[in-house]
Image 1: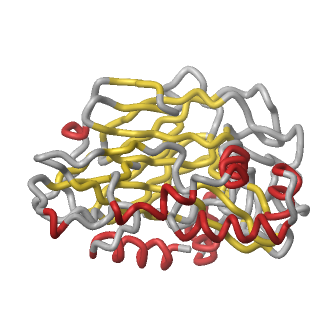
Image 2: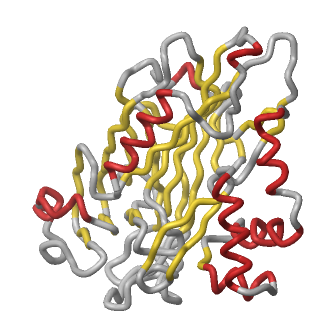
Length: 326
């Protein structure tokens, strides 16, 4: 995310002026945490952490969710920020974010072992592909299959006459094994609008410990790895490492609705399945996320509102869509 150095963003920089808040950010960079865990990590009281988290939330650095078991669970909104100085031809960066539940797919083709689970139960048992069409799928928090694909559709809220700067797609993923197997490799492919971004080799289907948010009744795969895919004007990146020289122009981003496909194919060398974790399973209290940064040129000084607080119509519509997806 890009942040302009301007008066409107002074609260953002003030939020970074506290050593305690810096320690909180450093701890959250390693993974989500609740208030008690943060208090123990930074050496202050829970009340003080709550106050600091409130300031970080106000400027968009941290977001939080409520859990009956964990209380208030905090996570970073972004893992990186770029400072931008105003110039004579300055471009304003705006953005929106969509959160997609794992069961809110548009299409799926999957073979056993496979299934869906919500936070309390399996959805129609194990290894029956018909479960993927059950109405309860929209509440799913965990999805897995050995071979096939799952596709999600997301709206393109970038206004006309604006250019996309980058797109980030992130999700907590692992392989799929009938029980668990930490060294079970799988080639997992990600596609945007029918074009493959890259293939990631998942190391295994993890069960060596309980996932941070995995409910106690679930005894199989416990957590995955958070993977971040980014497409920009230079190429395709996975966890900030370039994977190809394909750019935004190669992914048909002019479409009004985008299609995101996670695929495991038996044509690949390591068809070890796929598991996608939602907010209430795994190590990260979050769904599949899509973040889009976009810009327009020749913005006048009077139009230069802060890019941090994201008050453009496209963002508001994006936020509304994201809330309806929860």
